[in-house]
Amino acid sequence: MTAISPETEAGASSRLHPLPVRLMHWVNAVAMFIMIGSGWKIYNDEVIFGWLHFPEALAIGKWAQHGLLWHFFGMWVFAINGLLYLAYGIFSGRFRRKLWPISPRELISTIGAALRFKLGHDDLTHYNAVQKSLYVGVILIGVMSVISGLTLWKPVQFSELLALFGNDFQTVRLVHFLCMAAICGFVVIHVALALLVPKTLIAMITGGPRVPSAQPPASSP
Amino acid sequence: MTKIKRLPSPFRPHGGIDQSVFEQNKGLVELIGRRGLFRGTFSLGALTMLTGCDWGDGGSVEQALRAVSRWNDLVQAAIFRPDHLAPTFTAAEVVKPPRFNAHYDVEDVKPVDGRTWKLEVSGLVNDKRSWSLVEMMSLPQQELIIRHICIEGWDYIGQWSGVNFRRFLERIGADLRARYIAFRCADGYTEALDMATALHPQTILATTYAGEPLPDPFGYPLRLRTSTKLGFKNAKWLTAIEVTNTRPRTYYSDQGFNWFSGI
Image 1: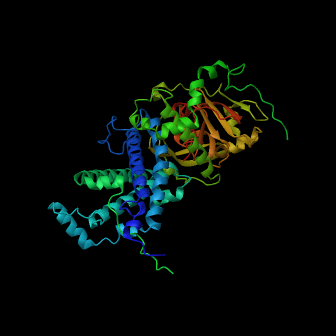
Image 2: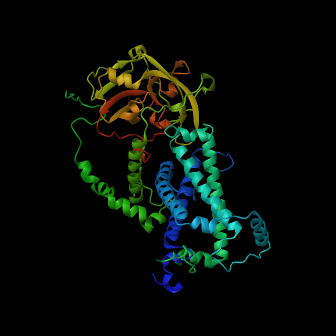
Image 3: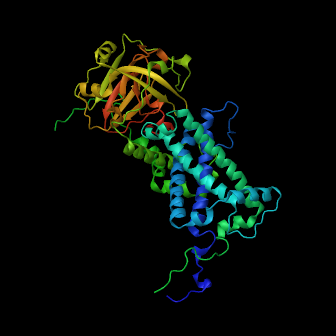
């Protein structure tokens, strides 16, 4: 193999956000929208907190059964897309390159810089420690929302999962609810920051700047 | 192989099904197709309808979602573990009285007279004799202290006893290879079980709660209780059962709730 110039090497796969990542990101956005909106409909039928009812105008589904129909459709989209994303992130090395390591010292200094509005946005290709923590955190919460959701759906068939939650059905409901709340919190921050730095939003549509190839070129025979 | 004779079913209209029903609903039937599913799932229209502008009856979005719900029935049947027992509890944990739920208020419950009550039996069974309450009580009794989970999200521990449903089906000579059991109730409610759930060791026809005859709101004289279904599948005030290979329509699944509703 002859030496390849950076220009010819740079295909779609060497964008900051390769096509599969962008597709999975937007499929996930739609799935989350469905799951959260229909989840609010289901929650309203038997609230966990007496003071909290979600506005019916924001809930998905006219009656309880429609919220449930949406939720048990959306779960397939959310879970399958999520599994593909995890597999891609692990096997392509993207998680290792982009999200690891997270330095506690950098985390503190980044939070400080963010609070003083002195955060740099010039290099989209490098995630700061706060970004890394938020992304790793929301991925783990997404996994937990699926595990707690599976347990709510099948507490008897998957009684082994229920045992993880102390065999208490209402505990699982609470965990599932808290996952939703955490994801909502993430979405607020994520969307606000993406709108503050619009090129990040555009990058998730177009793919963003070209980055050096993920794998160092193998020494050719 | 012995062929089991079928008697007229109390669940179906006499004289067959009026074919004009199909003609009238042809458009609806055509909507429930793969194309409807595809369009409903992926179209931009689906997004605009998310908050429910098209939820009247039989909108294409709802039809697509119901098709997914049928798929979920298949998945639930596939992951069902026929011998896997739900956790049981102690008598000290039992909630008395249990929480009432129906599609009407507890004041509107119409009590059933246990002295004249009969359980009709029909479909793929050898012995279609009706059963009185005394006869049901004379069969071996099984107690279940299990968690009741409502589709709304609440749960409680209940203590039920009655006839093991598998033993009852064997007793009436039911074809255990049939696919479904349909239930009809005194208040017009209809429910159904898949055969695997009917044969699960924790499925009973209950006559008592916490050691006392069933209170009227909870299904006196006879109700279904199974550990592997959501609450609404556990039909109360049973008056008839039918063993069948035709998937029975049920009160709540007609409205869009999932048919299988296993837990």
